Image (cartoon, rainbow, N blue to C red; front, side):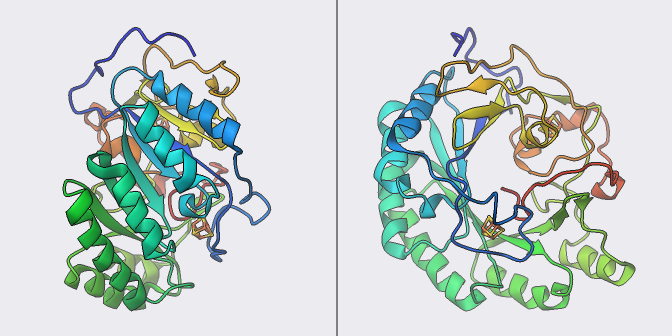
Length: 317
Ligand code: SF4
Ligand code: SF4
């Protein structure tokens, strides 16, 4: 990796962020998962994990390492090696995107390991696999753990707005919010971009999202094409092999990668540029100040052309 020559981001609200897709494997098999079971596989070995973390240690300044997968907690070496190495060898903060299937014992260990460096736990509620009451019981127990070990961290419950389930999601939203948690709806992504909801579904969808287009409240997978974005310079997506990409869409569109953290070819870009893509499927870039929303009003997801042949996962990983 090239030697970093700057530590301070170009904008005061920009949070330098890595999304680390630590493993491909997931222990769930959601029908709406945009990744096929064939590609939802793979676990890094110890040497690969260690090399990737060494790469993270060379990033300039303090970054947020947002760990996703696959399912991070289903990765064999996640708690045993990946998290301890991140804590021991880097100064970075840690967030996690999980299907929240891990036993409480594992979550307990995670909260203790990450301590005051845990930032956000994004827990996806997959109703095909788990009942809301069971999920929320665990979330309440996890809240107590965080209050003890990570009092400054936050927690959000993701829900994919799957067609055919929208009417039932009002009660789920109410349950989640009554338990004191933030409910974060996400439009369902398909290979052409966003699922083409019919008219009735759109009415329900707008009520469920409270008509919000704020990326802090709903993931509509909009287009930020034409806006200035620091992806590649202050935001990187790293896969289980250490291959680094400027963002998820760049990876999906097979744009040239930023190199590999394992073989030492990784290099950050020196500066951002104009977003050339018709969809931004994840809310990390807008919510961490990576894409500069003030450049012009962002069009909404429905503007994403069907030609945007993405294979991003439905829960935003
Ligand atoms: S949607 Fe998420 S939890 Fe479900 S199978 Fe895909 S990666 Fe796993
Ligand atoms: S706005 Fe989103 S899709 Fe566009 S370059 Fe930035 S991260 Fe990638």
